[in-house]
Image: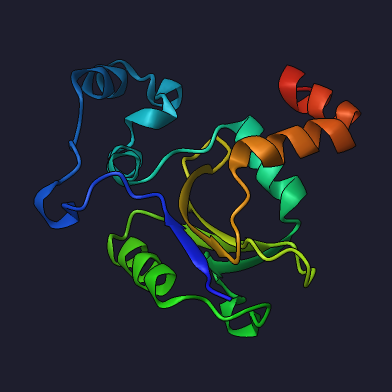
Length: 173
């Protein structure tokens, strides 16, 4: 069987683009003492990551977390990737992961997997930490024998976990 690889990169010019250092809004917030009101999306690292990979909304992340409950962390003092032996990561996925690491925008990355042999659609998510906010995730790459479209995974989530879906949709704890 062949393994499908979905690379979510939007652009392929990482070496040409430098993130914007500071916006006028950022300068004014600092000058006026409102640093804590800095919106997380104004971070240069988030801006750079968003150029290349799709940002996950909290709802999308909740669905991935449900569908792929096991995670292996790398970064922020962890290196659980050495223990990953769920499947063989395809070369195309390895190249994309390496390029994401080399961009140095992510504080940590994780491989999420179902850890069930009949389901093999792992995904790699990169995270940028912003003080005072939840980490912001970006979908890097996904692989498997037959990748189920995200819309189908979302429908399964709603069908199998209606209460959890309502909490996610309404953003309840």
